[in-house]
Image (cartoon, rainbow, N blue to C red; front, side):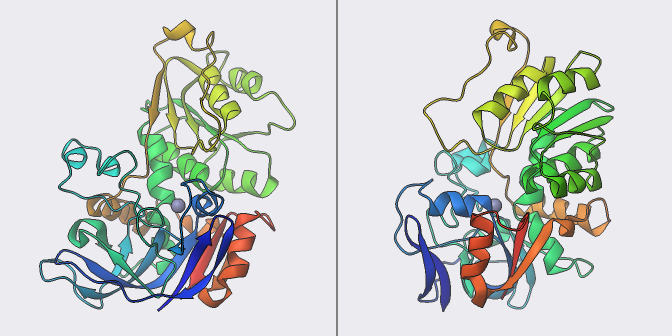
Length: 349
Ligand code: ZN
């Protein structure tokens, strides 16, 4: 079968690979749609260390090709969403309520990390009964595929943010995860959502997904402006959706005492992330710092699909580019180099 791989750090391309073997609880999925993620770029540029001929991609939907003998709820031909994170549900971390950390820190992140990913004609899923979700007839593949990672991670930013009904929220950066955090904050009852973003097309999308105010960091001081918009108090919740030291510090600075800094960003550089001492109340301002990796699991995906099915959020506005799998090299270049105001690149198989 054909797969799009990272041959080594900095080098991608197609190669032929054998169809994966199935264990009793596993499923083989024939890919129909996939999305390129910023994490794929991080991986190719060495974010998880060297890899040889690793199939990329972790956001996909498809049709069940075959299942292991112990899979109960899925059959060949079922149209399914696959979580970007595919935990081992028997692991102690899963039993402790943190399935994304099963098998060690971030261990639920298997696709294009500890095993081959989804940018292939077929791919393997462990614990199929727990890591697949059937896609309702009313939802297109093009919408459902956003539930694999973007909705799950963005909404997690809002969920971890402990947003009071009518509370104030700042979402720092309006990339695809930040945009879904903006939508999630709105769904969680925020009374004011402030989106921080400089790119005009992303500012517009932020408005579409529920931002009431936009702060452009190239034109104004973000901390001053957010304090001004909140009567000098700061926000109840700041969601970090970039993964940069300066953004994280801003999140701490703009959060009021008792508030929550909810991190979704990937911090790929440097030895430390710094916390601004004074605005952290010298360590005593009752500010909570929450972090998490995209939650996976069938129940979660079924909930996310329900949000889409009933029109609460339409993720399809995130798709700025579409390519066929055969054009994957160009598609990856557009996503990797952030060309043409790209937000998300959709691949059709
Ligand atoms: Zn992703």
